[in-house]
Length: 324
Image (cartoon, rainbow, N blue to C red):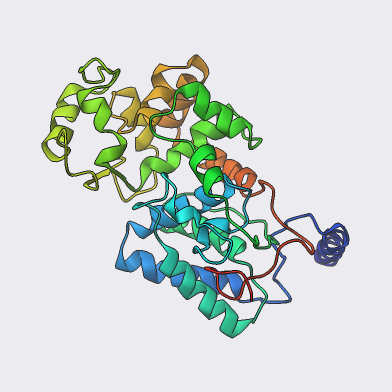
């Protein structure tokens, strides 16, 4: 049985290499057998130093995949013909974790030079961050390569924004071959991490341009938020996306939505704007295991958005810049 399983894995590997377009978890088993352990170790150290880093690394993978596919374009600094995605509206003053990725890459280059892509580092770090915060585990398909460019306009246009309408957000997911189930499950990543005052201020003071607050937000919760998120100033003040268990990856995010305590408009609308998403919210609120299973499936699906494979792109030596 073990022998036939090994033969099957070898056959899968050969087929994958032949068509150069298939991601699979064993991609580095021969070329860099310690790759997964190195990523996990650096991520664990970073999260131990600052628990918020788990959410930051998870978010980086998301912001990478929604722009040009999962190709590490989000990591590139500006230089030459490249205009970095780090300056886009979704990333400016909020995307973080780049130094942790640098540490992972340096350790991997020492162990297995020019072998492990920055795009795969992001995918592995997102999984490891989820697990470290108490969330589900999954096998990460690997074999992505790194882009030769970035897309500032793509970053500004393709990443779902907190104040987008429900239809706009769903459309942005569908354009990446992600469906309504993926939308609700992946939004559950907001069970950890923070949001800035600037991302939800309009809900507190002027939700529809009529000078009135958003009444779909619990008003006692809104009053607490107003104390640290004034009408003007304090743009960068941070608030937990899940005030109940902000550092634990669990299903309390969905429970919050049911009692009108979703921090971002894009969160609360999953419960208020669509019957189908409302049902998923209720299911995940009632059954954490169901949420975990779907989150893992949706993360694998998201990680498969237009990867560069085979001879496309390159394996960057430094994640911040293309090879010279």
